[in-house]
Amino acid sequence: MQLKYNTRDGKGNNILKIIQIKEFPVRMNDFTCRICGKSQKSGCRTKDVVSGKFTDYANVGDWICEECSHLFSLYFYSYIVEDVEIQVFNVREARDVILRKHKPPFKLIVTKSGKKHLFYRCPENLSDEMFAVQLENETIFTTHERQTELFDFVECMMTIGASKTTLAEGSIPYQILRLGFGPHAAEYLRREIQTSREIQLPLFLGQKREISEEEAKCCITSILQMQDALAQRS
Image (cartoon, rainbow, N blue to C red):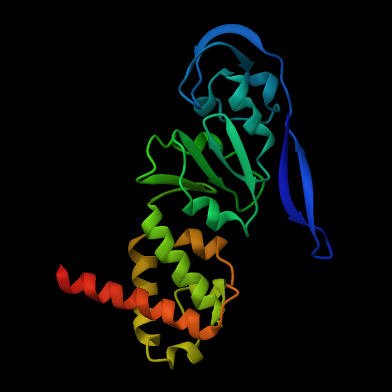
C-alpha cells in the first residue's frame, strides 16, 4: 500500500513523496480492534507490528486489525482516517483538511514531533458537528465554526506582522497594538489562550495568507465585532 504526500525538498521546491505502508502477517482470530472498535475475524498480532521498545499495549491490545495496523507506518506524518481511507497532509494543507466536511467515523491526527504513534490516543469521531483533533499528546475538541474563526484570526494576524511564536505567548507586536483594533485583539487572544485549547491548532498550523494587509485587517475587525455582538446578547 502506498500513500502520496506533498512536501518540499531542501531548496523549497514542491515534490511528491510516496509513502510505503508496511504490511504485516494476518492471522485468523476473533477479537475487537481497540483502535476502530470493529469486531474482526482476522488481524495482526501487535507484537508482529511494533518494536520491542513499544510499551502501550494497554491502549492497543494484543491484536489489531489489518487496516489499523497501517497507521503504525505514519508516526512521522499528520493525517486523517475516514473509515479505511487515509489522507496524509502537510502543514500548509492542514487548515483545509480541518475545515472541510469529514465523513464519520474518522480520526484526525496532527504531529508536532514526528516521533510518536498518536492514532490510538485520538478518539474515534462519530459525528462531524463537534470533533476531536489529536495535536501530539493533546486531544482538542472543536467545531468547523470555531476553527474557521480562529484560523482567520491567527493567519490574518500573521499577515499583518505577528509571528506564531509571539501569538502563542499571548503577545501582539507593538505596531499592531497601535492599530485601532489592537487592544481588543490582544484581549481576544489572551482570552482564547486562557479559556480554550482550540486556538492551539492555528497557532501551530497557521500560515501567512496571500492577501493584502488591508484585507487581513478587515477580517480581524469583523471577528472582533462579531465577538462584541455576541457578548452584548449574553
